Amino acid sequence: MGGATISAPSKKMEENNQKEPENKTPSKMARLAWPKAKYGVIIAIIIIVVVNLIYYKDVIKSFF
Image (tube, rainbow, N blue to C red; front, side):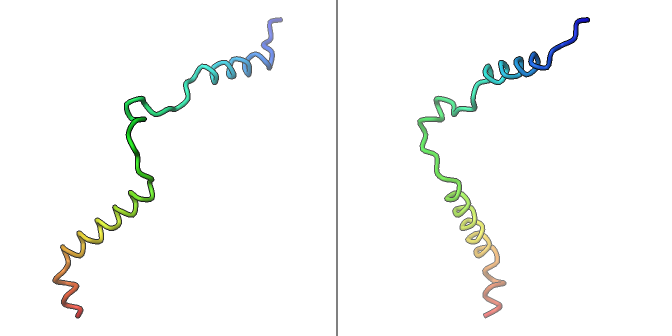
């Protein structure tokens, strides 16, 4: 009677995978110079340390 073959669903999945566009950077964003992520992490840590030093300078001075 009308049984589905195994190759039909896999063929359909292959077609769907080919139709999906790849994740690409939008054209307006491609012209920007993006810094490396490790530099952002280093800058974030420096900012956190500096802000904490300013905020807690009296507590730090009391240790010395």
